[in-house]
Image 1: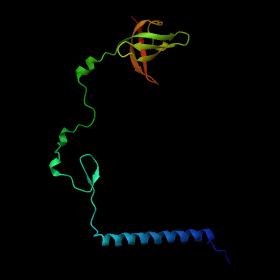
Image 2: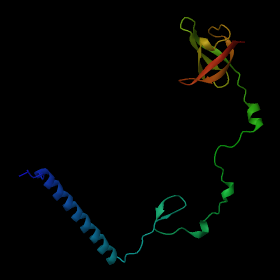
Image 3: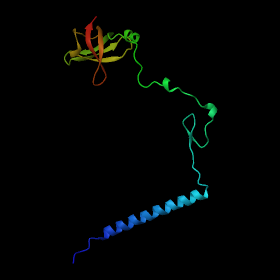
Image 4: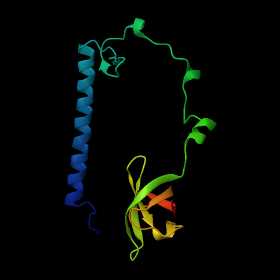
Length: 151
């Protein structure tokens, strides 16, 4: 005769599964009985004007009517006047430049912000304390000064 495929571990797992099923069934019946005792009405939760959940309905006098057409989704289009106001060429002063390593830093004259400058972004040769004009470009670690020319 063949040996039974039912092992001790399998029978224990089956018992646990059946016990869980029975417990779940008992809890469900207990919830049903509790609902019948308490009246069994549907519980409501309301959201007030601050976004908090409450059990009282909101005051209809405080209700605001919002026109769906007035809601803007996305970024507003730029006007031509905004483009003219922005000047891409900035002025500044070289605070540090190492010619052997090929990089340095430029301090912007407007906002006193330091920008990295690499020798590949130079048009003219520069040295420390030179007045320069430059443009900004997004780099790996922040904004970089490019097209750097001496004034």
